[in-house]
Amino acid sequence: MVINIEKVRELRGTRKQIDVASQIGISQNFYSQIEAGKRTPSLKLAIAIARAFDVKLDDLLLDGEELNIQDIQSQLIPDVEEITATFTLKITPELLLQILEAAIRETGVRGERIEQ
Image (cartoon, rainbow, N blue to C red; front, side):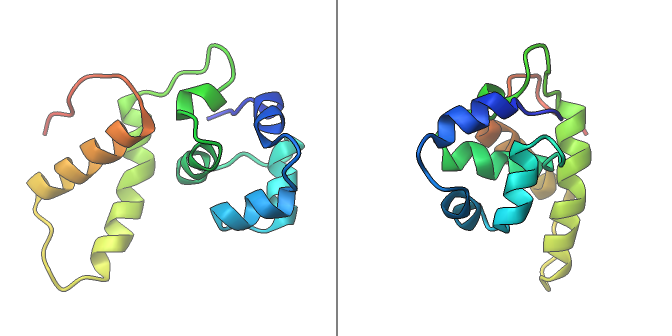
């Protein structure tokens, strides 16, 4: 996923990089590298950046770049598996599907319902 660096800089405005970085939970150095185009944020981090600026994730993507359900699923499933490994409760496939769909809705991505 490629984000629009100019848009991120524009949204930051007069806020300091360190303040934005702190808000999204990364170092100022890493955030600076994202703004410089030297690092590409993960989906999870891109969502955090969008939330920090109160915009939809789509607004941060380069023109022509599209998010699709499969990309989101492939990036979110490892996160969900890591989270669920810390719980003693079993997460059913149905619950995992609900979690993924909620995450997709949260990003503002338009697409079809994920089928099992």
